[in-house]
Length: 369
Image (cartoon, rainbow, N blue to C red; front, side, top):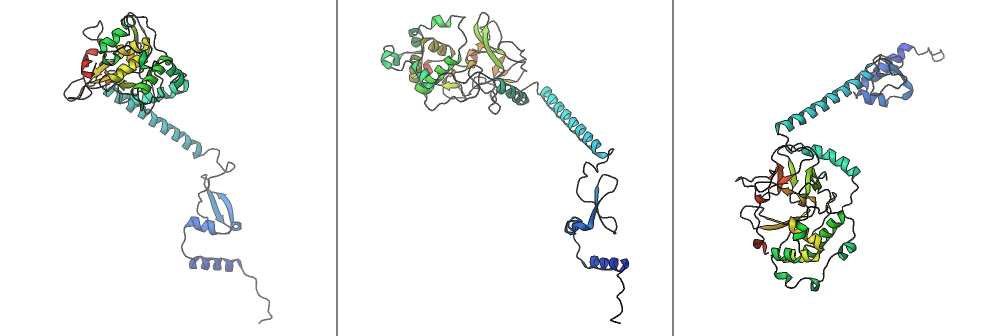
């Protein structure tokens, strides 16, 4: 009857209603259900394996969530430390395997330049942090003040002189025969480079981060110097010496770099360049010049190195020592076109780098001089 007291709702009745609500609700992902449920209906639990569980009060065990156990909940002896140790061991094995692959590749290639970029990159990281030599020491104004740019101060008929005439006019024989000429300083290289941009080719820039006293960027992506250094050679004067062990087949000199400049215009630009320089520097340029064809059937070209690569001495049949670097051969086997020099045998650290001047065709008349 309406006046009778209403009996209390039993625990069984609540569970039955909850069960009916669950059956009528659409299926959703477990993680979504956990996130959508009221926070006050959940309590934290641990299944004994380090995973945190979300349990609904009075219900069956719920599904494991994606939460990590806190420091207080982490087991003292569990799989966590073992997992970290296993991961470290796995990566160690991978690194050892990778090092083994590089070693075997280098042995298989006879120490060629295939793996040299890896070594060069590491050397570059060290050299960049320790390099103190500037790429230029003088300002443009200071470099220009050392040049003679007034043609009225140049010798008479300078524009008609041959290569030999220029050398004789500048009295370069004394400089060429002096085996005690010092290594060019950074100031010397700066003046010679500025004069080239000022007199020969204003579009040419020298922005290699490796200073000319160390060479050039042997690998452009790493900016590492070539594997040689310049120092005095007993009985020869200046020379280049291996800064480390060089394997047979390895690239020793990358000709055609930014420091290798060309003189065009039938010799006129070279004459202007020579007479604008101070005499000692001009005479050194004359001893470093060379002519070469860079392709089969191409014109003979006129070059000079404006970095320490210019100090490379020659070996061969006309010299006491054999050349230990050779240009790369082309398809026909000719070595007279390439500017890349490779080691033709293993070269020990401290051994002098020697090429063979006779590989290239030398004719100053064919370039207008």
